Image (tube, rainbow, N blue to C red; front, side, top):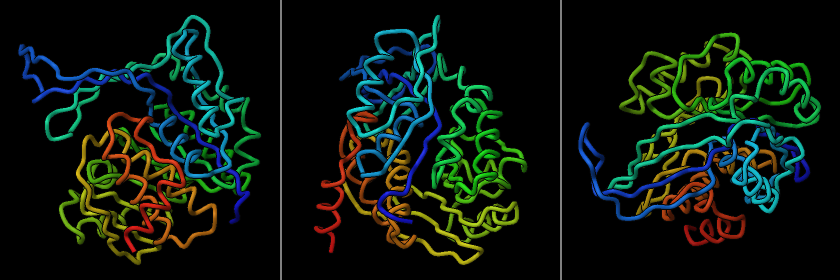
Length: 309
């Protein structure tokens, strides 16, 4: 694939309400926060922004509500080099919301109200199917209705568009969907839900990858947090370490990884080089607060990589 390879992202858009706390509240406990901000998020939008800022030629299929927040998000996405023609405003609905608590260790707890994201129906996908047909790759997550994710995967398969699925938030998936995925990028929790194998070591990751290969997925990347990524292609596996940085929060780290990874692949980078490029993007993101505000631009990723050599 080349510099002008096209990417389509299908997924969610949320306004993230982020509250920083010393520790997560227990049931019935009130904890006074240290900092509060509203940032633009949603797994689909985060991954689209990561790809757009990393240099991809990208279109986004998504929904916003008929509110001021939705309009502001659309404008911001356009500034992040994303084609937002197929990001439609849904009347009588609010833009999706995520309520996020971040503790002193940078870990997060998240509750989500889908809002307009629930309007990303099969009909909506079919209306925008040309964007999938014309793309070299389709990147999706699971904050959109599952039947819509499957419908998009079917369209992609018909048109030889590569399907990349980030199976988050964690949920069981049908073989009908998994068999239409070319690259899957679960974390340890998601890999366990999909395969029944608890991923506590490289050996576990290799076994989990085998289960996913058996479902027809050629390339498996299991993200292992600070330990990096287990990359398995047709059963040949290796762990590719990440970069060590001081994390402020891990919101959107996985999303940044996914968007940067597919951008690098579409530019023709070898897969292990694409993983390192994605590691670098995610490493920068975790040193900054928030979802989309933390996502780096291409020049920042390239600079970071040069400093590691």
